Length: 121
Image 1 (cartoon, rainbow, N blue to C red):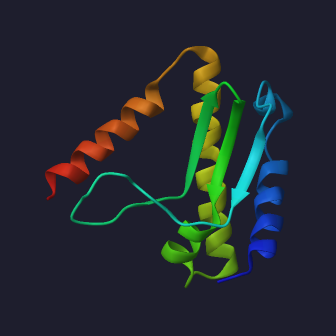
Image 2: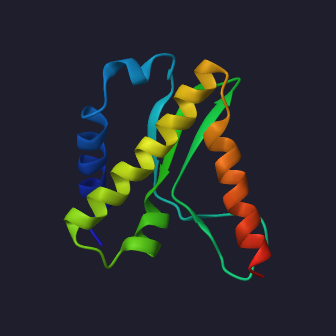
């Protein structure tokens, strides 16, 4: 797995490819945290959380978890890892943009996916 510093460079490169309009009201920006984060539910399979979108009193921001990427994709080539980073970042930005528009489509889809995981137990 690449270092967290190398990961941050790739994350920043992916972020720079997005239109500036995407950053409207994202006052907390994109945070890269070193830890691995797991879904809080006890499921048969432990699910890693790659990223999260937050909207609270502190503002609006995206968190990306380096440790989760290391666990799930540590064996990937740098190019394949870049694809996963970009995919996760775009997913979280979709949550942000939908929240600005008062939409919940991706949130509903994520909930449906979690129901499928629960049913597999």
